[in-house]
Image 1: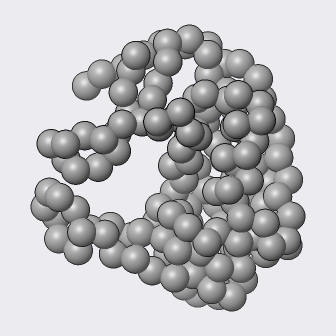
Image 2: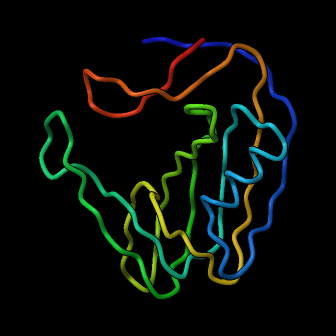
Length: 145
């Protein structure tokens, strides 16, 4: 285990509007406001999204299982903002529900808002945290600088 201690910085309340892309808009916010590391909580709905729901088999390197979410699905999400190669990196997991079906996964692309998504972004200050490739696991993980 590695860890770092810091302090809570600025807090942003964000409203994402119909048809906006959740991941792209959060990246824009991080770049515009120079948010280097933060925690994200989201709730609202998505029209469509591409998510990863786990590996095909529990082995390294992982072979992700991709699933499409389409039609209106409720969303509750939690994640973080870090930087990778001087670009904002969003790592956001969510629960996506419609009627009596629910999927939980990592939001990867095409995260299109249905109606609205509300996010709270809580910035952390202190030691720098970055996202970098971990060659032992063949995934990106946090690095404490």
